[in-house]
Image 1 (tube, helix red, strand yellow):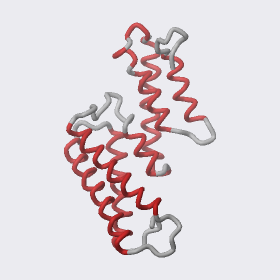
Image 2: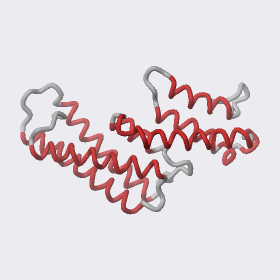
Image 3: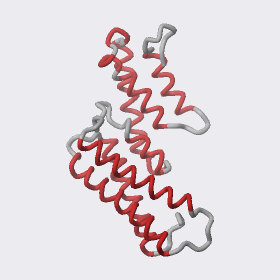
Image 4: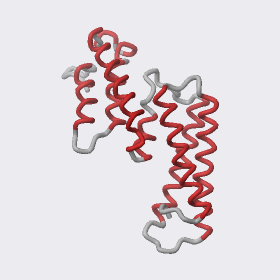
Length: 186
């Protein structure tokens, strides 16, 4: 959200974040992104940030984070994963950091898992080889997320801790279902 001159507009960022929550199909990850950008505007564009909007945006970010921790279990797994990138006001994990590489590796494995699922969606019978391939990717994703979680526990925000714990729990259930042969995913 920028002004006509191309400068960031803090109130517009805040309003965009709120609007993403008020549409018929809310988009919490986009809301987090805009409200976090609004709350952090003073770091990159201090001349465009006002103290009163910084306070408003920071409070809104905290409230949205709390709401997501209370109601996150109602969101699809993919939305929770999208929220993670914006779930820390201080931008953890930093791009290209060790933690970022581990997290992105987990996301790559989840994407490979989803490719297998999409490729075989609607099939009545799925071979053991396909199930094994899907299980391999989901297990690798889970292992990477657990490694990320263990190595980052003191760096993550409360919202990130909630998201990772819930995502790992959901992935563990999918992995178990694949291993035992009763997953709806395939």
